Image 1 (tube, one colour):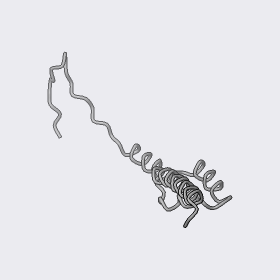
Image 2 (cartoon, one colour):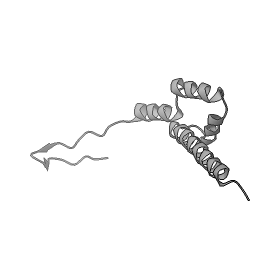
Image 3 (cartoon, one colour):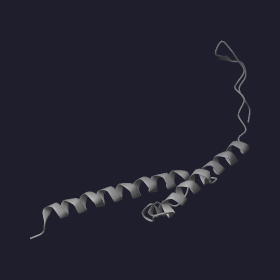
Image 4 (cartoon, rainbow, N blue to C red):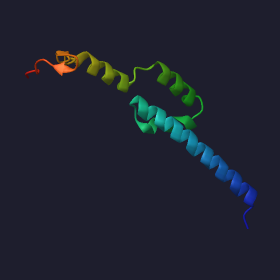
Length: 91
């Protein structure tokens, strides 16, 4: 018969480790990197190096946002007086 205290401790440890991987996975995926990099949270020293790299790296999400902002040309608002549009924009 298994020792239930050992089984419950192992279950708590597995839930804790799964939570750590989930957090790392979410951080990497929101930054635009592969979610598989979340597994680096298990490797000692590498997890600290990855955290520092992530803090100072140029994220793909930010690069795409800057590229989109550079290409964005805002449409001028229609001319109006008191909410009445004077003339429609022709495209």
